Amino acid sequence: MQGTLTPPLVSVPSQSTSSNQGPPPTASQISNVGPQPSKTLSPSGPQPSKTVSSSGPQPSKTVSSSGPLPAKSKPTNVRHMRRIIAEDAEWSLAIVPLLTELCIQHIIKNFEKNPILKQLLPEHQQKVLNHLSPDLPLAVTANLIEDENYWRRCCTKRWPVCHVSKHGGSWKHMFFERHLENLLKHFIPGTTDPSVILDLLPLCRNYVRRIRVDQFLPPVQLPTSPLTREPSESESEVESEEPTMDHYQLGDLVAGLIHLEELDLVYGVKDCGMNFEWNLFLFTYRDCHSLAATIKACHTLKIFRLTRSKVDDEKARILIRSLLDHPALRELDLSHNLIGDRGARAAAKLLSHSRLRVLNLANNQVRGPGAQSLAHALAHNTNLISLNLRLNCLEDEGGQALAHALQTNKCLTTLNLGGNELSEPTATLLAQVLAINTTLTSINLSCNHIGLDGGKQLLEGMSDNKTLLEFDLRLSDVAQESEYLIGQALCANREAARQRTLNPGYLTSPIIANDPDHSVE
Image (tube, rainbow, N blue to C red; front, side, top):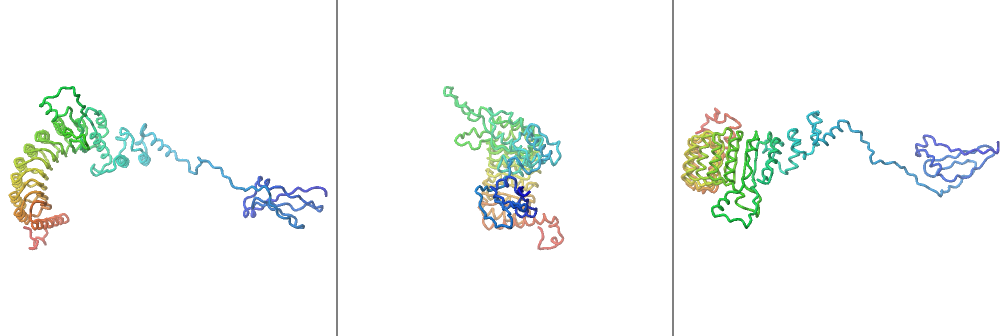
């Protein structure tokens, strides 16, 4: 029929067109194009359909080529189209974690309440250990975790400076030793509960080999009431020497440490400031007797040091008596105390009734008689390799006695007699010792009065010595030329020692033995 109207057709762009001009328009885009221009009806047939372009918000219209192109008019209702993407804060591209990872996270989170480690595979154990907190209770970790990396994290978090080499190279040993030392340093008798230390014993007994405590706190003394009776003069003297209570007693602790090898103690207080009192640095007789019983019962103890604790002759004799015939003791250090000749005689007896290798009595009050006792024991000793008597007052009486002992001793390698008021007579005998002794490698005679003649005699003795490597003569009034020539002899000895280390047959080589320029006297 001629009067029938043909509805307008919306042409859909082809695939090639849409790929160049963008995605096809949506229904909302088509509906928002705006009012359509009026359509002209041709009686001859249907007119070309309109084409909507997706290149922009304003669609283009295709009209019949039979008539002129209508002018473009801007629509009044323009909407800028943009792409909207829904955002979910919890949505992630990460994959779902494996069940083993979820289990490991659960074990780490609940390790304190339910420690599971030994039942896991080795790679899973390592993951758990790498993420465990270093603040877990020791009751959980002490006997369960052996991983050194975990204990290294525990040590570095607690202490800024860590010398693991001083603890046998083990981070776990270092942690327990320093933790126990810290408890002992801050233990206050009568105030701190002893169970704080004893409860740790089952956890650390297998890992503590050294205890080094440079502070023992005394008990807290309450201020006396002014209404109390004033003590008599004798009572006040006793109270000034002995406190009402003693320091922490180590007996129970040391008895439980089955691998303890070193005990280094100082009975004093650090950083006392304006609260200084002499009683803070008092090593009482009760402390002494308790410590003597402790070290006597510790059969694994190899090194015992008690320094800067005001140990006098009586206390030294009590301690040394407990060490007689000790099966394991190798080093005794009682330096920086108040030990005199009686204490030195006790130490001389110990040399004959032990396997002691190192004896240190530096900075005490040993004089000639005490040195003579030590010399008598040294002459027949076959174990001691180091003797330190620095900063005593031996004088020539003691120095000559020790020099005579060195003429027969065949084991001592290190001797320190610095600061002992020695003079030329002692140097004369030591020169004779240097000519015949073949075991001494280090001698210290600094801060004495050797003098010019004594220095020359020592130089003569060094001309026949091939084993001494160190000889300290500083501040001993020796001529500079003698000191220089002695130094040259020491350099030659050190070079020969180095050659012997590199070539064990250095001195017995046929070439050297037959060469008169390298003859050995």
